[in-house]
Image 1 (cartoon, helix red, strand yellow):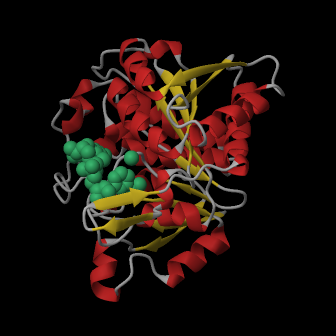
Image 2: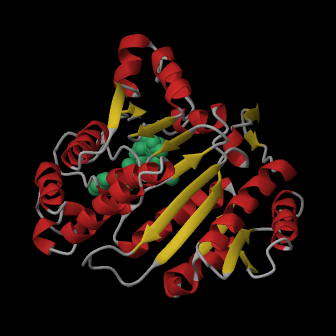
Length: 331
Ligand code: NAI
Ligand code: MG
């Protein structure tokens, strides 16, 4: 029996978390959920986005799954998502982008895994107004931070027989910060003689991915570029409703979809729960429950192979609940 902390999050978070639990229950997965309301609703009542009880639960269980949490644009509060990643030093944000079922997208057979450094870069939030007309932000890249994500990416490549790691930076312009990230990637690559290191600048990478995504299997990059390229890659296979993610640290891991709280569709029972359910499958793999993960992934793929099951984001008209039940019937 595994105990897992669930952070329900904002917007569509609650709906997709319910869908995930329903699928996992039907699949008879051996998990007990410790469920916490987090985000805006919790903030309104308690003045904090995440309760101490929830933090304690995460620290005890070591494994969490979360729905998205809203971060209002502009000044005010900082992202609770970024905070969690920093608090627990969840340095590796791993995002597998794969073609699924019979979804209409421009490409087939996409299989790209993004390894995004998750604790440094401009997301450290070291920002200030120098005066009323000048804002500044400091970008931090460390050798340690770069090395551990590069190693993680190369180890993944080795395990999965991927012949090439594509490191993405803007080292031509950001000589020191991106220069260091690239230099460390080159050093780490030397320990993996069978795996090629390909170096691409981020602007070119955006174009390459839109034109020739099948050329890429594993992208190693910094925090900001990884954030942007993940959404771009999601667009290659049918959208944000499909892409799962893992935030992995030394002893704690939190799984969550790439997408946000989707306030435009929240509370309408139309969100696509696939990204969260597949995040749950990454979690099961992390917990060693490979068979259950495969069974649920296959059911999701089968469900997405029938256009009649599609939710609105995929061009269909099924509700979150109907889609969830279709997955269950395919288990
Ligand atoms: P978003 O990812 O929430 O939505 C972008 C578009 O994709 C919207 O049209 C939305 O309806 C659609 N979409 C996203 N997930 C979907 C799903 N599962 N099914 C169907 N359609 C889906 O991005 P947006 O609007 O930029 O951000 C909304 C809020 O979420 C912001 O406050 C942002 O800061 C936060 N956010 C939180 C994240 C997290 O908790 N890790 C990650 C990204 C954003
Ligand atoms: Mg993002």
